[in-house]
Length: 354
Image (cartoon, rainbow, N blue to C red; front, side, top):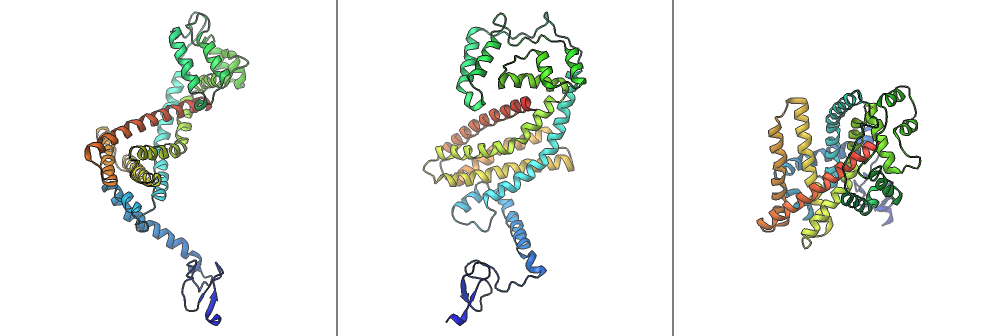
């Protein structure tokens, strides 16, 4: 019996003679290292991926919820894996959107340069004043205190913000008592940022929040603050999506808590966002390389994604059309708020870290 057995060179398990592939690991038994063998796996995996993507593309775009339903029901080899689909499409999307962001960055820096080159001299008679009463001040401090962990600030930073709000007569937010010509001359002479901050009036024991404000002002004065902030915000979007995407699946789990495991909702989410990124990538590619799409058409296409989402929920979860509509509206509304908060936060931290 043992004379009829061979040992696999890959997994070292034994199998009967005559097998073309190892029944344990799948490697070819005749694995002479030729050029063909060397590139066999790479080429076969590539064309397998390509074929599955092509088979997945039309259902993804025109049959909402179809791929997710198939995958959850066990049909997982014919179509591209949801996470693989998302990663592949998101790479293309962020590559194409980088051209758009580059144009926005250029435009933002041009605006910033015009602002920076505007003749302006602020002195004691021309301070920037923001009227805030005591009730508003308490609400601001209360909000900062609740969100201090999320914002990455501590009690010292909050106290500094409170003291800034109460500066002078209690109504002046920040006393921008500086000579812009002098600041411009310091920037042009290559002075260190610390020197410029000091000239602007930043306190010696400034915390993260206060430093960020002054850093943003200096970057604006240099003419690059807006563009750099936009670029940094865009660079952080892929990371934020890895947070927002599981949260989207969690909302689905909460609203459809009896309709499968969390992983099922995550599959639906991967395919949904793959559709969104594919659609937006196509719009950007057409707009950039073929012809300019009218704004009203782009707006209609973007709004139609809600209809796609609604139909996908109907097909995947198979619930009543009215309750599905309500849930789709709630999820869209809540997720839009999260996206806006994420966008504003990314831009703000991009501004103070640019």
